Length: 89
Image 1 (cartoon, rainbow, N blue to C red):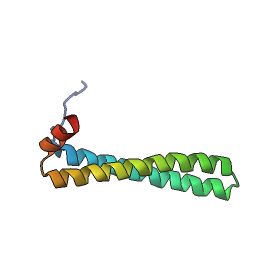
Image 2: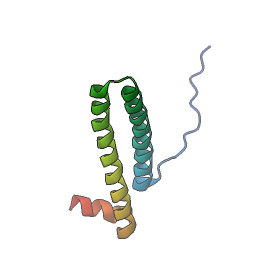
Image 3: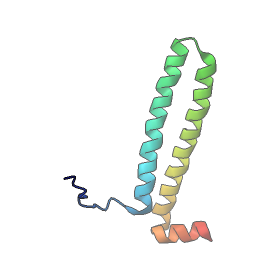
Image 4: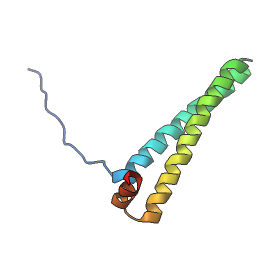
């Protein structure tokens, strides 16, 4: 007899800033992976791969900068609802 019971649902949504925090964690983790890949490529003498990885890593760095800027704007505006209204207006 198989049990399909679902555990308790927990609310981990911390609003917009929580979403930005999770995205920052994701991008920062990916940056670490790409930096390791760049080091490995350089050590192996594969500059072509290292250069491709640098471009990808730079895109993640740009995403981190944008997310941090958005979090700062939310702090300045003071309310996530006002932030969303500002972005949509």
